[in-house]
Image 1 (cartoon, rainbow over the protein chains, first blue to last red):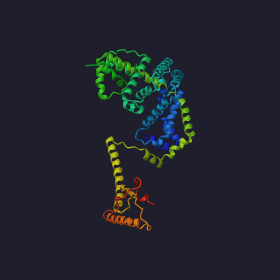
Image 2: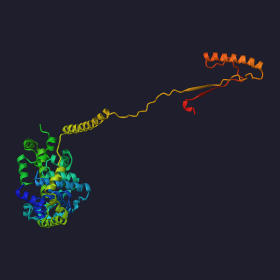
Image 3: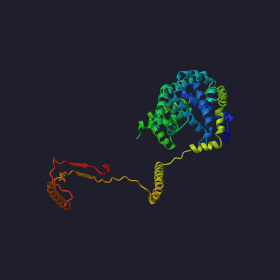
Image 4: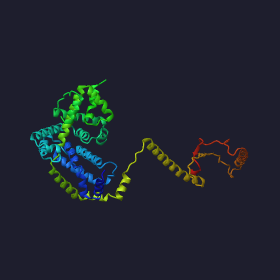
Length: 207
Length: 224
């Protein structure tokens, strides 16, 4: 944890909302993306992520610095997601993703997307994103959450099982199912690369 | 011996770049030997790469974040109670709360032993409390009322009605008086004899009617 972050946490603990907003700025995109892929709706994703920040602000007094701030925040996020899932507050609407993805054009921070001024590439990305959303929407909310924690957060199966409250086997099955769904929707052919080096080269160039 | 089924189970982990480094080497060596598994692995990597790319592209525009911040700031300030809570929970209150909420992990056997010892101490405490109270009671002389059943001897009173000859000679008839006197003397003699030998005797008496014997059962309490 950096000194600046420590200082911001201390200030936020003494009810400094500006310090808390600065602290949130470092992780807001990550939390928002997680929420967006979890609930598949930009409005719900914003509500959910805002709720995570409010809960984090309320519980900041209990943060003792035993783990990193993001690990602590992620725990709050997962609990928040699970509570919403139990309450059935949000419906997962994959059909709305097409509308949301129109905003992809104006992303400035992502170098890869920003550099692709070619409209064909943008359209291709949009289609792919829509397919990914479609594949994820076919999973149950816990399966989707497990996949996101594995793929986006890089958590181990043991950590996921502990956080979500399932067995390690269930976590593995959920990830496997998510990958199968993604493969179905993205329609990626299984081609045999001639050699392993060719395979590695293909992976490196992103084919 | 290469087993495609077993290898493919480990491919997702490898594709997600989360296979431990010591297991990654043998897996890649197996992939180099099996074209089918290699193709599967390439497919998985491509799927995850494309998914990653697509998911990253779902981030909203930069202009979105300024509004997002403003809304977060507003919601933090709007809820004054939420904003004041961290201030109130700092310092001593947090310490007190932590004191009551902090838990210590104890192994189950240790916990069981502690519970048993606690239970035994309670039992001993209660026993040691009752014993000193009982001892002084035993030493001091105290009146103890007990109900004891005593057998009551039932008294039986037997009343015998004895009829005696009351036809004594009168003074007007001397002969008769003499005879009666003699007989009376005899009777008295006999009576004296009988009273000497036996207090009451029915010998020589002839009742006018049937003798009546009344037996009254009862005790001295029935007497008035």
